[in-house]
Image (tube, rainbow, N blue to C red; front, side):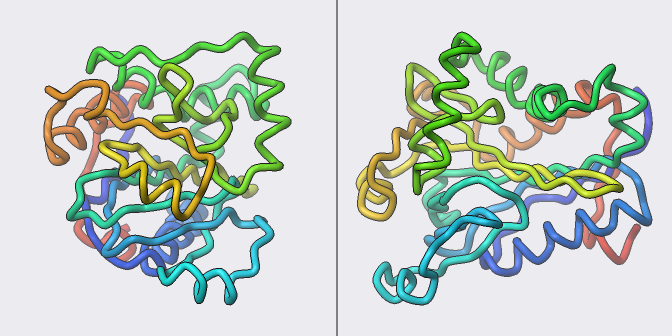
Length: 246
């Protein structure tokens, strides 16, 4: 199919541990320039903040009563439900620059975002879910509003996918000279009451809300993994411990 890529099997852990692993994933691209993809779940209800998002963290955590972590990528706040709820699937994608340079005609941010999100767009389409395709002028207006929002799921950027005006997948990136990290939240069956309690104004919808016959999490992961392999022209090599096996 193409070059070798690394896939880290699904894991459930604390938000702090996952953020640490994703940051290490990005750093490892310097030594091992391979496409890396991982899916994971959260041990408990957790709020994640964008890398540069302004937030009174200590006060907020005391007020909210749930853990708060800061992502290595940008974007706005995301509510992550516990894996036992089967309400969300989080992914992290690492791509070295040399792969992008060999694949894309342009390294403009819009081009890179479109490339990184292609496996999500195609994966949803194969499930029968056709996402919104807003006019560029409409999308520009939403992106201007995005920076004023607290919740990632209260507005849309180019890296996000929505369905009938409700956000389905939110993604954000971090660029380094050797590669990029994209983190994203794929909603499956979000609890709207929880979202409104912790991140008011969020407009959320899940894959199972739209497509009740969609496969379970393990099959859904396999589905997106196969689509990603085709989109990135890689064949996946599973690693049980990413950093000790590279």
